[in-house]
Length: 390
Image (cartoon, rainbow, N blue to C red; front, top):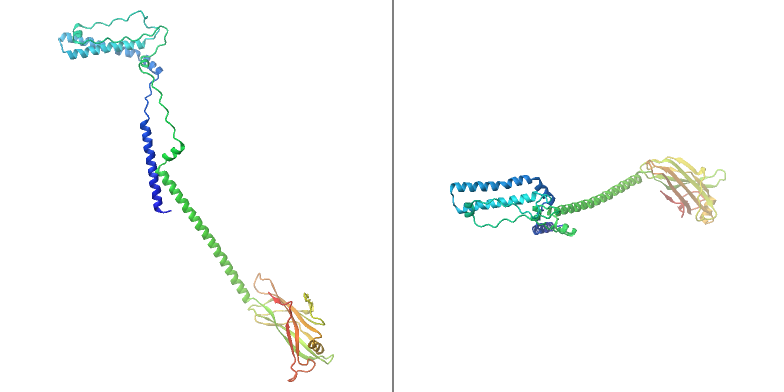
């Protein structure tokens, strides 16, 4: 989200808030304020409670008018405006007195309808002469016998019509017009916080994945380095060669060849618990596929091989006649075995190196002594099975 988008949203929110405030003020001005009229019962109570006071106050204008008239007669004042004002005051006092008396008296105690009210005292001649003709005040209406008394204020003031209830705005108008600019700002701020939190969560997830990948790579590197260290430094045994010796058998007087297998430790650390098995077999037929290559306890030699050291296995022998048969292809001579040992590193397990060699060629006359003209050599090669190391 860009900055211009945020300012546009703020301006739109302020415009909506100002429109809502203007509509609320227009609705408030259009609705008339209805003044609640006092209840009739409250008016009757107030009039009955203050009846005596109103009756006493009603006599004050009459006394004041009489006093003013006598003062004018004594002083001989003949100003028409003052006299007219005083006469109007006296008439108004008489009217108020009559209205208060009629309101205070209940209908049961009111005078009978055929009895006329007592006439008011005549004003003085000077007052009548100076006061213009004024229509007499209308006598208060006397309710018929048995009628329910009604207060004068209730008769005079008609009941005010009930004000119509203002229409309730819908939830959509309330949501659109009652919303404020601060609400919009808070919503935008909350949305911004949500976006920031989401971005941070995504970055944290990516960081965690990268850290996990780095940890896996570091672990793999450490494992590779450890394996390389173990592979480069651990003891490793393999069959290096066969040493051959020609000698005369004392029992038969014939030449025999003695074989000594030579093993080498190519590692930089010594072996532990080295055992070497070597088996010699002269067969009339070649080895069948899947041969099990058995060994016996007589074929085992226990030894220790230091770093870069040579170790010999159990020796074997073959006569000149058997070598001549092998040379002619009538017989087959095999040597097989294995070397089992531990290295000095923990958790590497026991190692095994297996071998199987076959006498594939005999050079010279194996039944004659070795000389310049008779260079006897025995050539060995790997058999197709039982060869490998871990």
